Image 1 (cartoon, helix red, strand yellow):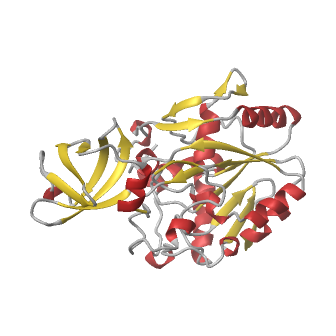
Image 2 (cartoon, rainbow, N blue to C red):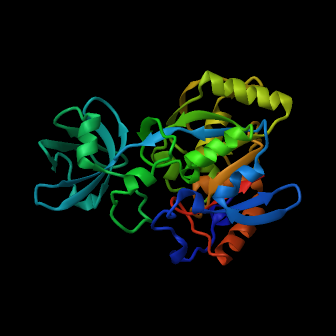
Length: 337
């Protein structure tokens, strides 16, 4: 299974740099696997495609301001991206430009916060002079917009690069399939009899870690923490037993649910998942899937291709490109029925 098989050409101008003016105004491509029909509409029409008794599962993780800026000893600006907390004061980080950071070097973040570089190499470890509180990170951090968004974070990103139902802080990237939901859409779904439940998967570096191996089966995701509440496991198991649709919103929801599947049911669990879903994977839980348009050769694209079929997904992406859908985090979405 070759990495090149999951590549496609995307015009640069289709990479969304800003969110839609209104969340519900993003476009929605609906693909029906039963009859191969494609409908081009807007996310505000999503409730028209769901039925009473459907179970919709969302990821309620909350993004924290993981992108920091510091100065090294020579006064050069260094971007420090918090990847993982190791201990009270230690973090695994991404550093850019890495060539300007040396082991034992000092990084000054201002506001009395500094750190020294403990290790560089496969992992970059820095040690802060104090334990960072949520308030510290809020004061010195910025919303971690992806690198393909070629602008600095703005005030509105603090609200727009966050789902309206975000609750549990811990992600360094948004669960982007959920960015299109509004309180009004959620209310309409509930009024229609759709059951809405949540999981938590804190999106970390593994989700957007590049696949470097040409044989994708050699790729290792790395661990991300997740939690399946008891009420969610009960609702999903009941729906599955009764043959009702279970709709996952985003690749993080799919991976969390599949990681909690044991002995023929979804268990209420807290733990870590390194699940990398590739073609041939047997999906045991979701019936339908809402997801954004992903980067070529990325693990979310491979997961979506595994659910729909690689060639079919590439065909749909070609149509989306022709119709100038917006791609990636702030882009449009698709609903695979």
